[in-house]
Image 1 (spheres, rainbow, N blue to C red):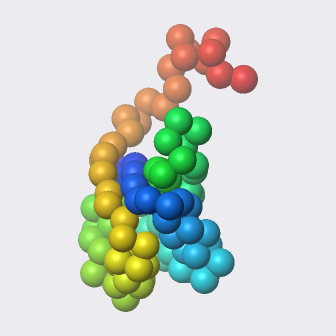
Image 2: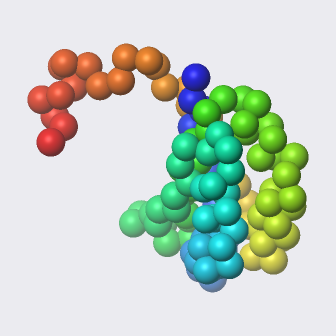
Length: 109
């Protein structure tokens, strides 16, 4: 059972963008992508709100997510969040096992 987290990082003066850029340039994001149980880790910029960055973070199961939260990488992330004075909103999703339905396929290219 996968778990998908949508994390909305919010700041001022483009700090959320600077945070995401440093996560990538420092190699922290890539290291997370190689953690056992990680199924995806990607940042996206909001066209509506330039002070918000979305992280879509996917994990194999709760145990993998718990290991990530207890890791040294999480401490590095928290230090960067403090550096950029970011606030977060988190939304958690558990996808169903059916995937895209036949009815949905007509809208997907």
